[in-house]
Every structure is written in structure tokens, then in C-alpha cells.
Image 1: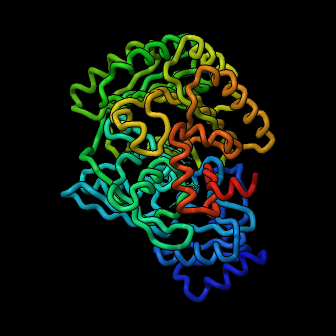
Image 2: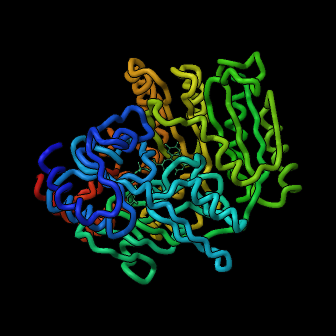
Image 3: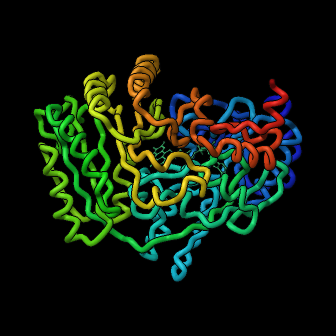
Length: 467
Ligand SMILES: Cc1cc2nc3c(=O)[nH]c(=O)nc-3n(C[C@H](O)[C@H](O)[C@H](O)COP(=O)(O)OP(=O)(O)OC[C@H]3O[C@@H](n4cnc5c(N)ncnc54)[C@H](O)[C@@H]3O)c2cc1C
């Protein structure tokens, strides 16, 4: 154990109520592992907090020792920011309480929750919180980065539905942020990531919903261009009850896929309808019929099934690399390049994901939250997913190559939730004209950049010191 983590351990061990795990101790190896198998690091100390005062103690001790500190909620940072070598990991996985208040349709969510813990608690009251599409993702990282999912068009981003935050800031004080108290911090936390402190609680809005209509279709290679054109034009006029995501990939070798398509480039369409089910069935069939699908299904699914149906596609421990961007419009040249890209995909789990934002998320004005672009509705995520370290270079090069080819048609901007670790130079792009304001909030709450393992917004003092 290095000197600094020894110092943190010594100052914590008498007062800390949670677990303190050091290398070699029982439980340490499980606790240090995060979701992306590309990021295998060994913190000098893991402080698994039980409550706000544990978080305060950990921040105070780490700050005094000057140790590099990572904050871990669900450990799903694609970039691997929730761990570090030799430093301190503040682990919130014991803080997973969700308190639902059905009548005003509100909940309080602790800072270590996974999406699944929120969904199970809110569904008991027939309510939902709009979040992401994989239930083992951490809620804190997702909400602080914006948070898109099945319900974004209907109810807005996750961060649009937060009414208050409780935060332990870099000086270890507990600060509340909402529209009345510390409104600048409230603004910055809705999209600004982990830059401002450890969020120990979110106060959020909920909505009544227990099931949706789900339709799925598979389009063979020859229909991909036509599908993308239809989707582009259709979504511009679509009601907010409809969400339609497309994945370009090699068809898996599973029973659901017609035998003649397995292993070949395909486009998978997943559509949900959140409104009246009868209206939804016919609307979804109409949408799907435009895309010459080889196979189609449509059924009512419970919200909990919807929220877990992609869980096994993104298992812990595999190797992942991603790049993301926005398009204002998917022009024909971009569609051609996407079509060419799917023919060169290097591994069977790799996907080109396309989603259309708009709806409730686009009704929030650009300056209301720190979250980036709401005007460019087409979101692209290139997500490589493989298992062998020997395939790292090939997969990463493939993502970079496709991204560079598509980049000229993109509008500047990126959702920080889908950034890799080598993209720190794109962080200002994520905030556009909001950059100076967000740097100001960072400079006020974290002038020494204690919280720097994130899509980092350097405070003014640190920039001045380094220049
Ligand atoms: C399988 C998978 C599915 C995904 N699906 C979606 C999706 O549908 N929609 C979407 O928007 N994103 C999605 N993402 C991206 C995801 O939102 C980000 O990776 C997010 O950062 C993960 O949150 P986490 O809490 O698990 O991350 P962690 O790795 O624990 O932390 C990520 C970052 O958040 C900071 N952080 C974590 N907890 C706190 C806290 N309590 N206070 C302050 N800072 C904190 C950390 O310091 C770190 O910088 C997905 C990612 C994966 C791996």
C-alpha cells in the first residue's frame, strides 16, 4: 500500500462505519473490478461507505492526503473513471436506498443505486423514473451525464427529472442543490458529470406507467439503406409516445434470427409505444412495414421486462470501446457510410447504435441544464465489444476509423455518458456555449480539481497553474 493510501486508512479506520478494503484483503478483488474489462486497476484503498458521514470522512481524509480519488456507483463508466491505480476508490455500492412517495409521485434515490433498484422500487407503486436501458448500470453516473433511455422522448432525460441533489463537495461539506438553493450547482449537476462532488441523494419526479408495446424487426443487408431513410423521415413527425432505436450489427446465431441471416450484416429495430396499447399496435406495425423486415414481433411487455431485456447483451468483464456524436440530419452520404461500416464490423457483439432524441428532451431550452445538445436529434453510438486482449488494437482502430469518416457530417457535441477515456479534448465540445459557465461552477466548488477522474472540467486555478 502506498504512503498516501496508508495515511487515508489510518485517519479513517476508527470512525468509518462501512468497509475499508486494502489489496490482499478478503473482498478487495471483487470490489476493485469494474464493468469494462479493458480497465483493470488496483486502488490502494477502497472505502465502501454506508452513509453521508462516511462519504464526508473519505473525502476529507483523501483531500488531506492529496491522494487520487475515484468515485464508484455502478462501475459502468465506459472510460473506466470509477477506479484508479494506487489511489482511493470511494465506493457507494452500499448506499442503494430508494424511498418512493406515491402521491406526489416523487422518490429519493441514494447515490449508489443501480437502475434496477430504482425500477423495482418505483414499479411497486406503478411508477417509473426515466433512465437507461440496462438495469445493472449505475444511476449516479448515468443521471449526472444526462441519461437517455426508452422513456426520454416521453418524459425527458433523467437529469431533467431531478428536482434536488444532496452533494458532498471537495471541502467535505454537505450541500443541497435545487432551483432555490445553489441554483448554479443545480444547473451544473444536470449534465456536468462527477465534477462537482459526490452526490449522495437525488430527489426525482416519477410518472405512472407499468407496461409498453414493444415491436422488434430485423432488416437484411439489402434493406438497410431504405430502413435508415424511412426511419430518418418518419421520426421527424413521430409522436412522443414512440421511441425507435436501430442497431446495425452482424446477426447473432440465435433461434430468433432466420437461419439465412445469421452472421450477416443486419439492422435490428426496437420500437416502443408508451401510450394507449391499441393505438400503439397499429402504429408500430405501420412503422415496421416501411422497412422490409425479415422478421417482426409485437407484444405488450411489463416495464420491468423492458428495462432488463438488454442486460445480457452487455455483460461485465468483456472489453468495450466507444465513440459517440450527434447529427442534425442523417443525409444520404452518412447513410451510405453507415451502410459500408456495418459490412466491416470486426466482432459479432459490436454495434452501431442509432437513436432519435426529440420529444420531451428537446422541449427543454439549451440553457436550462448543463447537458449538451438537444437540437440535433440523431444520436450515434459506436460500441465495440469483444473478449480477447489480442483484439484490442483492431477493435479500437475500427471505431476510430468509422468515427473519423462520419465526423464531418456531425454537429459538434457529445453526450459524456458515451465517451472513452482518450477523449478529454472533446469535453468542451460537450458543453458548447455553456463551457464558461460550467468552468465557473467547477472553479467555485472544486478549485483544486479534487474530483478529476471524470469527463473533466478543469477549474480556472488549475488551468492557470499548468499554463
Ligand atoms: C451496459 C451499459 C449501458 C448503458 N446504457 C446507458 C443508457 O441507456 N443511457 C445513458 O445515458 N447511458 C448509458 N450508459 C452510460 C452510462 O450512463 C455511463 O457509463 C455512466 O457513467 C455509468 O454510471 P455508473 O454510476 O455505473 O458509473 P461509475 O463508473 O460508477 O461512475 C461513472 C462516473 O460518474 C461519477 N460518479 C459515479 N457516482 C457518482 C456520485 N454518486 N456522485 C458524483 N459522481 C459520481 C464517477 O466519478 C465517474 O466519473 C451505459 C453504460 C453501460 C456500461
